[in-house]
Amino acid sequence: MIVCFILLLVVLIPGIGMERNGSRSWIGVGAFSIQPSEFIKLALIAFLAKFLSEKQRYITTVKKGLGPSLALVFLAFGLIMLQPDLGTGTVMVGTCIVMLFIAGARIFHFAVLGLIGLAGFVGLILSAPYRMARITSFLDPWKDPLNSGFQIIQSLYAIGPGGLFGLGLGESRQKFFYLPEPQTDFIFAILSEELGFIGGSLVILLFALLLWRGIKIALGAPDLYGSFLAVGIISMIAIQVMINIGVVTGLMPVTGITLPFLSYGGSSLTIMLMAVGVLLNISRYARV
Image (cartoon, rainbow, N blue to C red; front, side):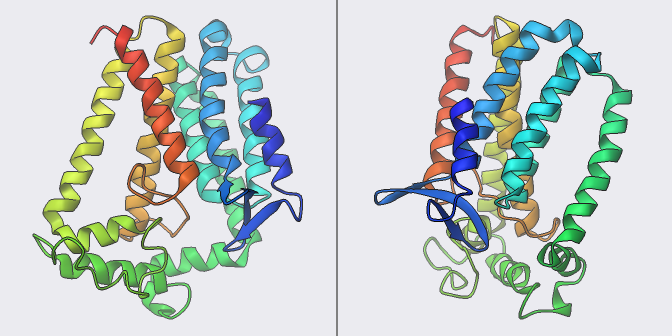
């Protein structure tokens, strides 16, 4: 985790960090590039699982349990927001909040944290004009169809013609320079265009099956550390899936989140495969 924090600092250095689409989130390594914000998600889950398994009796207190956990989480979130990368930061914070809730943190603390988080979220949106544009385009994308509303409109144009069975595998039209980022953030729109409602529903059902199995593994884990680790991994995947599909279908404002296992991207895919590998290892010893 310390290495991941160092990389989050290194990526901010001009000349080392690579900038794409307004975010300095990548470090070039030869012909490859890595995204430190993806690695900190899994590192933080592992560290928090260990901390909570040893300090669970203090989780209802701010000083010894909840406070140190949240300080670490928001330190990582702050470094990610300097890139800036609100989408990845949201997934990370959401995952950690689920872990703290499962560990037994008090509802009152969550209520206070929710109010502070809402105020901070509104502040982050208002501080950047492009984030505000995404909110307004989410409410009415056709108000600015050639700028802030372009992505969601093109995404819906991909999903709509797919119908029940789709246009056929490889027959998408929107991926040919109409829909931005069709291979990463909006891969689900292309999948729905080619495979239709049936194909899109099947993908969602497969993710639901993975979520169900992950919950069973967490419940049957032989120790608290394994249980919290499984909860963190499956929460990270579930939150990322919900945000990505919500964005693609117009249910949420546009943000840069990949669809686990399907989107193109080395760092994201590597972390997801590592996370599932850890989850499978836990399942070897789980009572499921």
